[in-house]
Length: 491
Image (cartoon, rainbow, N blue to C red):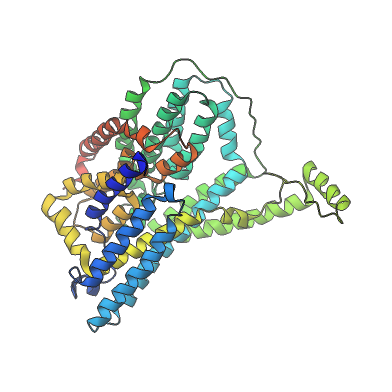
């Protein structure tokens, strides 16, 4: 086993043991208070199943086993154990009611993310992100300028396009312009992950955790912007420290040009309109935000129909060439050349196909598995341990550290399931800590894990760990900034 694997599994094991005490969901009042199965054999078995499944998730990079597989299997086993335990106690209704509640939670998150991912994929297909990459790599910026530009863009784009997509986009720029300078690429990748997570912490569209808080109705859309300054502090503190180790000079400019496809800016405009509809559905119509997102997806599909018909009547020169070749090779078994991006007729369902299905199914497994553990009764245990004995401020600060070790999604879902009594300032604090806490370790956020895969062998767990001390300083400074700036939100 490699040193990196050992560190990951050791840290994950510690964090998992603590986070499991928090894991629960308010499936129903009956499930929480009628029967306590925390000392039942089925409850212990469910904990063991979840523990093993999450170890497999942590080892995804080395095992080459998609993270969705173990948690989906674990969810099925855990709910079978829930049903057996409750049936043994003469209750055959609670398990069914609880699992239906959890399925509804997942359905809202799933459809919301599917719509958002489709918009992002469509904008990528229309060349918006490629044009941004092209502009950055062809300007001949210095290493220091690239460091700050990619960090700033990560912070600004992630509230709209989410931290994962933003980190991947900026990482391609770093790998393109920094080739041959390993020291620069490592520091720049660390900076991107921190900035993307920080930017995602003050927007419901920036991170799954903020989306869950918004959908729960705890923090309204515009109230998230109270976290802009604390999030900015979280990025700037480590960025300023890392700035002093950047190499001098500048890389050679790369001659790279990208062309926007027809309708690129219309798609971007539709996405902004869709965000507005999601906010309006939640704030004015008192409907779930997912209704606005799915309505916007319907508009995008109609616009996709227009793009497809336009492509049919006004084909590009490349398509005419392919059509002639098709006639010549009609009786041949040779395949046609690939048309490449921008030459194939637009098809909205290809954007749907490109959604990150492994991630979506991972959310299913995590939400259902944690929901099952909550139905066993671990909710009260975790609530008393963290929010009862330690107090909300200490507990919410610890949530950030747990997010770095375990991943912020199950931790935040557990907090929302506990629903401790906290004032508005504390809910904003836990939103901040869960969002930016994952930056302390490379495995603590989807952005970090994605960049590790993209910059394999360059941006690693150990490389990120060398800067964790600076990131912790930024984490502490962001909490201080929140307590100072948003003091009026604490009772």
